[in-house]
Image 1: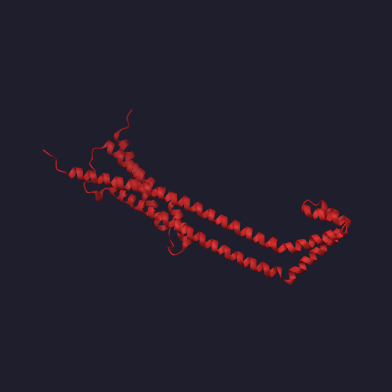
Image 2: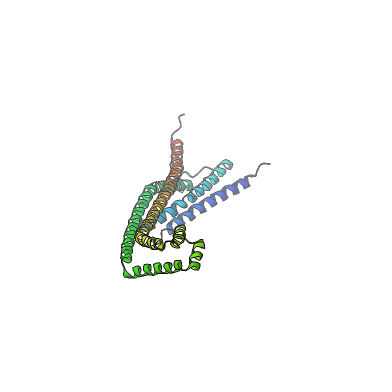
Length: 270
């Protein structure tokens, strides 16, 4: 049993309505999204570009619904489309598609540039912070207060090693480093071994802390570069794909519509 013409008409009208609402709602979203407008703020530009591209498929879906509705209508009615294309919703939809295509085409390289600049700024900031931390560390390591704390810890550990019960408890503790366990065992026969170990640890402390700071800096830099690469790749490629899609829809549609007008306006040969 074939569907009746009224059901086709309802389907066409529904698709057109849904498509128009989706397109208008997405455009309103694009207008509200940048508020407050801060074009000179680099993080704002990166964030807005990301959000716009993430929403970029929504207007295309609206265009799909709209033209599907017109296609259904064209297969069920013999009514001719408006002669004045300015009164035809499809014309403005195709113009909008072309403009969106150009917009996303321009947005892709701009976003890649902004991501690169933001990444370089953040890397420079991390480098400066690391330098400040190393300078603070050198100051702290040279302070009398820190030296006194180190000496207190050394004396406390010597006192533990001098007591057989406490020393064995420290050896049996799983949290005790294996190297310290070995030194504690040796110190029973050679007390100087513990003194040499503590002096060695105190001398190695500046290098250990400096190495730790530099490893943290390297990890942060790697994470920033990775995030910049991922953002540039995802948003850049998505923006280019959206540009291609919108341009194909808009330009081919306008070309076909304008071709149809020229064909109808061409005088027939009789």
